[in-house]
Length: 227
Image (cartoon, rainbow, N blue to C red; front, side, top):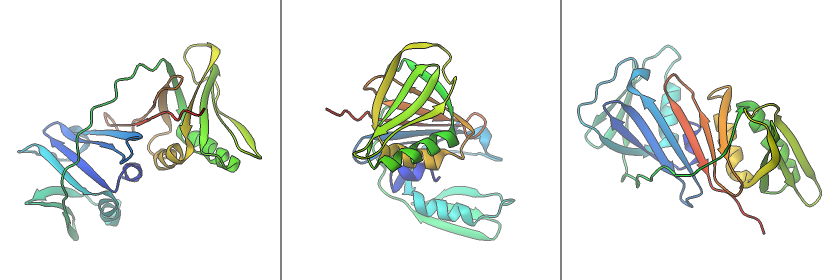
């Protein structure tokens, strides 16, 4: 839930017979999250009527945190309310008008690399010292790094050596906004040890985590073009 909270205050849950999905874009249409949790990930899963329901993600996250580590949490729909219950607690959340279901970006991204989630966040945290919002993700040879140039400080951080499956003779780089990537990296660093990134010059970056078996969470972030 923490990772979903970086996109919008409200999230729309797609409830289907094969699982739950969330596809949400920020108000400025700069980045999107696509999350899929299959029915097999639940202890019990029974959906009679498929549909979509929109709730406040911060409130839902606070409620889920109230459950104990050993508690089973039940989610259900009662009229226009999302019901969240555990053995000793029951909450009913108001729902909102469903957001538009945006299509998945169709982009041909030729640079593919695997990296460590924690290393990605720490590298972006290092770049914050430069006090600039424009950063670059760079691959060369088989390595991935991030870099930024501030007025007083420049930084080049080796994030993942040997991350590429193929040797890149020419450097490939693309610019993005630090104030968008860093919250995503911070929220996602505990989802999985590793994640996959795909990007290309002046193209969106796609970052994919697999937090659970058969589940996946993918972020798409638009490039930032500097003159």
